[in-house]
Length: 121
Image (cartoon, rainbow, N blue to C red; front, top):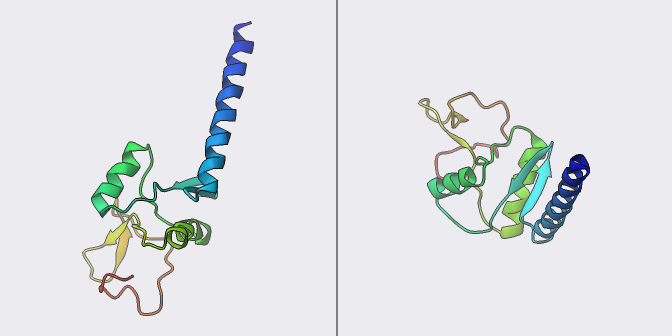
């Protein structure tokens, strides 16, 4: 009897999550790629505030590791007509970038002659 009750609760929660995801998709606040969920609250913030909000939500700042993930991030850039922070930083070697944890980038999609260090990469 207990197993049936647990299964009912799980089904109800799955239904609620599905409805919430549907609303967020409609409001262009969530998308997914390769099993990863990308989300935004649609508000502007500085890099550190963005990192903190991601952490509070149980996630991390977006770090595109392939064209699909890059497109997921670009979806928000186009939908909200704004920029997006990425989970990368310049390494000790000028014009070379790495993940925030210091590991080497395995995917980039820079425009020609970028990054230039002019803040518009």
